[in-house]
Amino acid sequence: MNKKTKVIVACVCILALIATGAAVTMFILMNREDDAPQTTYTMDEGNYQQIMDDMSAQVQEGYFETYMTTEWKFPDGVSEASDAMLGNSPNNTKPIRCELLLDETGEVLFESGVIPVGALVSPIQLERDLEAGTYETTCMIYLMNEKEDGTFEDYSSAGFRVTLTVEN
Image 1 (tube, rainbow, N blue to C red):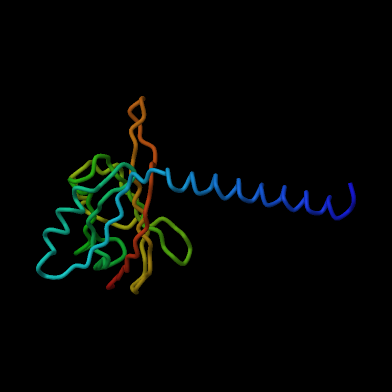
Image 2 (spheres, helix red, strand yellow):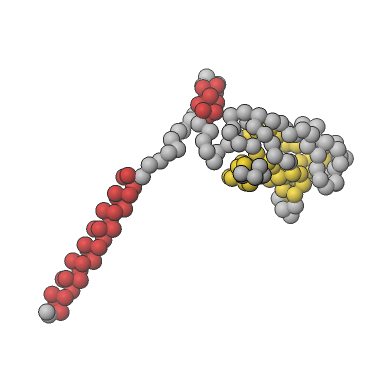
């Protein structure tokens, strides 16, 4: 076989491999099942309740809803918050827990225990005496999975920005 024939055979083999790879990729993409329906909402005053009802019906395994305020005020560094709210939505199927982390250092300022479905954390009091000021924090919410022995493990999580204000 001469050099020109070898090059042609090599090119045909490479093209065949590329075509096979493309066909396999197309087959996989076309037959992939997407269990989570993709829904886009544009909210206005007229459809707010319908969207909330739809979203509540779509809480799926690994997803969860929470309700919380994102600005927490404390009269001083050792007292309970006057307006902090954190709860596990009754639409969920699993308990949650939370950690409030100081963005600057990663220090845990508050930890809840396991929060049952539909429950509200109250009161919220910091585990560290902070001086007066405003602090940027992240509230990590963890969806919990109950193990066979009755203990819980983290299943999935999401973080939310919370601004802390310590007044005195």
